[in-house]
Amino acid sequence: MTSRLCAGLCALLVLSVLSGVALGPVGVPFGQVVRLLGEGFTGGTIAAPEAGQYRIVWDIRLPRVLLAAVVGAGLAVVGVAVQAMVRNALADPYVLGISSGASVGATAVATTGLFASLGVYALSTAAFLSALAAMALVYLAARKHGLTPLRLVLTGTAMAYGFSAVAMLLVFQSPRGEAARAAMFWLLGSLGGVTWTSLPVAAGTVVLGVLYLQTQAKRLNAMSMGDETATTLGVDVTRLRKALFLVTAAMTGVLVAVSGAVGFVGLMLPHLVRLVVGADHRKVLAVAPLAGACFLIWVDIAARLLAAPEELPLGVITAALGVPCFVFLMRGRGYVFGGR
Image: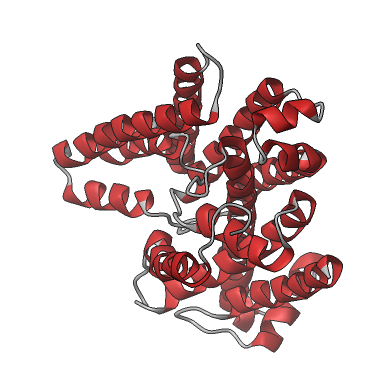
């Protein structure tokens, strides 16, 4: 069943990518999209009348759609790992405070011009550096008596409130209203302004992270049953939790740096996948990245179309979908982590 589901999701992913490139305030026919993409990949010649469409397809929409797939896949997988690591059904990639830390750097760029010499890379660079700083602070604060699930959650939550307060202070003290608006838009998640240069680091990080987590699937199964049970099964829980913390925090920092804080993807997708394939992490980690990639592509399409020619923040769409979905799970199935 899992292999058939993955094959179906791969087909859906291809369709989603083509749809994401074709759909927008300026529509491009599907046939034209396929042809222009073929010319772009093979280095073919583009006629002068088609130059505008080619730029829309190849330079603007394709990197954005591919990055949406990468971010969706990464957030879904990190959500799976974090929920197993802290054994909390409400955990998501941002529970460790990494995204709030990244928001401080991004907000500082938007409101004060920090790293202005880096040009278009200023925001992502500052967000990633502040995410790394947040990761270090959370780790140092939580490790004194061991990285237990409760200690990680409480430390991450407390740090997140502190980082969010700093970010909001920068926004409200900014003398430039447009800069404050840009910062708030980024904090809710956005793929606007994405170029090909944004893709390689994010894609490489997600691929490596997914591959590592899949090698730890059996250990995640054991950890989700409790530290004592995992220890009796031969799992070094402390060492595994440290490794998971570093991997998930690094992935989250990279993803937040390129897309902002897109909520609910890492919270809801793991639960929805478990409803279909069960709680076995070998299956969940195979399906979750494909499901997350397809989901965020369509969220990005909706964000571009619903208020065209303006864009909605991705977090607005994911919250509008995630809240009723979460309530349905709680009421309809009595769902908790991994089952009933």
